[in-house]
Length: 161
Image (cartoon, rainbow, N blue to C red; front, side, top):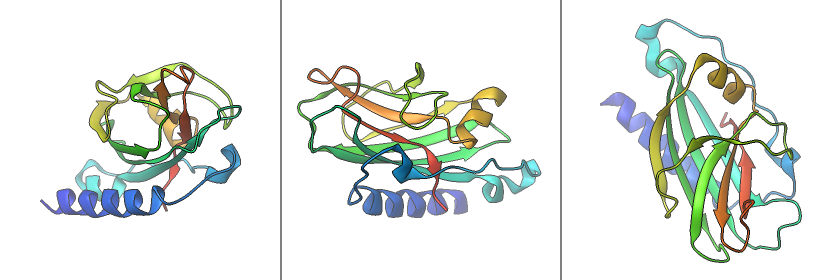
C-alpha cells in the first residue's frame, strides 16, 4: 500500500509540473545517471523515478506538449508509465518508447503502448540490456499523429530527481 501512495504522489507531481514545462531541444531534458541495483527487499527504495517532458521534435510545427511519469524497478524489470499530452494536431494514432538513442536521434520503438488515447498508462517488463539503456538516458517517449507520422511530440526519459 505504501508503494501505491508513493507512486501516486510521484506521478501526480510529475504530471502537474511536466505539463506546464516547455522544452526547446533535446538538451532541455539533461542526462540520466545509471542506478546501482540494491537488495530485492528494498524494492521501493531501489525504484527509479523517471520523467520526460514532451515537446515538438525538430522540424515539427506544433504547439502540443506533454509529460511522462515513469517508475522503474530494476530487481523485477517492471516499468510503470503514465503519459499525458494536449494540443496535438489531431488524435494520437500511436505512441511508443523508442531507443536506444542519444537526444535528438531517432530509434525504433522498444515499447508500444496498446492505446495512444490520452492519458496513456500501463506497464512493461524490460530486459537487463533495455534497463541499462533506460537508466543511461537512451530512451524517449514519442506520440504520433496522422499529420506527424514520425512523431508530433517527444521527450527523452531522464531521472526525475
